[in-house]
Image 1 (cartoon, helix red, strand yellow):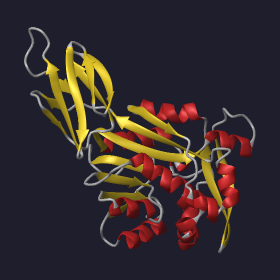
Image 2 (spheres, one colour):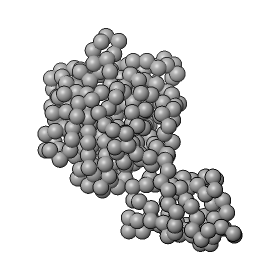
Image 3 (cartoon, rainbow, N blue to C red):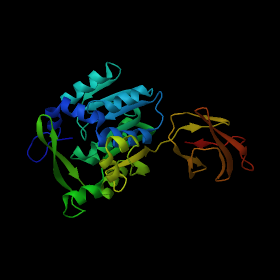
Image 4 (cartoon, one colour):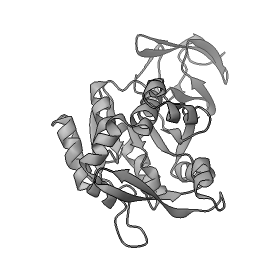
Amino acid sequence: MSEDATGEPMWSAYDQMGSDFEEHSADSAYNAHYDRPAVLAAVGGVGGLRVLDAACGPGYYAGELLARGAVVTAFDASPTMVALARQRTTGRARIDTAVLGEPLPYPDGAFDLTVCALAIHYAADRAAAFAEFFRVLRPGGALVISTQHPVTDWLRKGGSYFDVKLEADIWRTRSGEKEIRFWRELLSRLCAAATGAGFLIQEVVEPLPAETMRERYPADYDKLTREPGFLLLRLIKAGWVTYRRAPLAVPARLPVLSVISVNGRNREVAWAEETVQIAEETVQIKEYGGARQITPVRARPGGPAGPHLRL
């Protein structure tokens, strides 16, 4: 997040809304019954992982991640949101004040996973934001982001889909109307900012609403089952961890999709129990009880008994 063309910080509206936004997002259709379930599903299991909640708002995602066993660090640019997140997490997470798209106060490779929910469109320099996410993730770590669907924004706002421009919505709160400014850009440009930082796109999600929305907000449920509201990206920071003997115990923190390289030839493998041929080596890949194991079925003729795999 940064200042807009008027010089006013993009997060100032959240400072003004304060507890109004906290109360709204606790059970709102788009926050509690649409984005939050979709993001947490894309995140998957987080037990024991070091997780960064970027632009954490009042701390709902941080609270969910803590409840699922993650070691959570979070930040937001709004001092009001930081205070609310600290109240919600009651000392169980480190909550910092930092700005999305500017240097973050964390060392390289500090996290296994980063979550950035409904905030990347507030960063004036999305490329810089992705570059910092890439830096603070360990090799093999994942980034899950959600944002407003660019097609939906285009249909709402008009003009050219290919425009990159600062837009504004009016939110009605208990304390009055608030102008929320955000950056609108096409999907390919957002993806280019991510891949330009070094990320691989593992999954693109156009989520459906949770079933809890059907009874609570039937009109919103009907709309969101016909047209998208948000978009999610799950991104991977490619990297290597070297193992030399079989059987190979693969750490549980490796992403769902990894790259195996044998003799300089790469093969992407979706973790499952299967036997695959990689270059001239055949290995069996199994997942059970939270552990992953790679076992050679046979060695390459004339080669060592245990293949050298890089993950």
